[in-house]
Picture 1 (cartoon, rainbow over the protein chains, first blue to last red):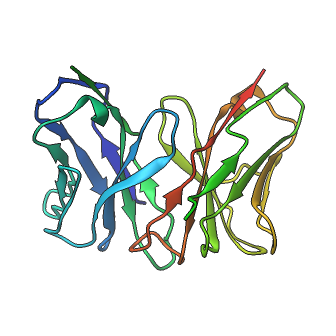
Picture 2: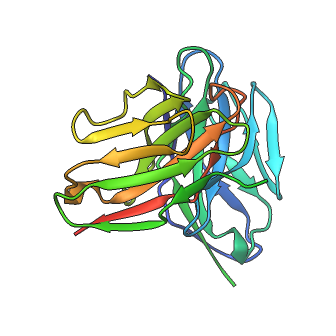
Length: 113
Length: 116
């Protein structure tokens, strides 16, 4: 079945540091890939998505590229801010009979001033 | 345009009591999903509903848990005879269309259930 694996957290960085959060997936066919962000006390918000191989999703300075050859969708940001502190979830979605997204366990990011 | 609404935001129950969690989807959305998030874990799918129909309840525990989405009013997740292991954050999401391939799910702020 489908699965998503994320790097263990927490990831602790200083402000303006470079961020990478690794995500790999196992799936048949051609799923879509998503990154969601969850700020403290809130629900998940879609951060970015990519629907086919080699697509790059981007939003708010975050980027992720759908790499089918390595089954990866790593999240990156060139310069993090304190306000980026949150939990980040990688997810896999598909249509047809398997329409429920599969979420990773989440990676907590803590950014210090 | 209001987002997905959930209430209450926090709910405390004693073992054996009932918990009722409500979710109002975004305007125009007829597809509702419930997820549970245990401490230090990711989201686990519980149930997918459309108006007056349960489409997929494969993630729902077989006993004590039920869900409905009536023609009028919010979707309700009901947990009977709660136990400590039910303590978690319960999230509701809605979408315009069925599926997770292209159709984004919009999440509510969650209900944090604590069972004493």
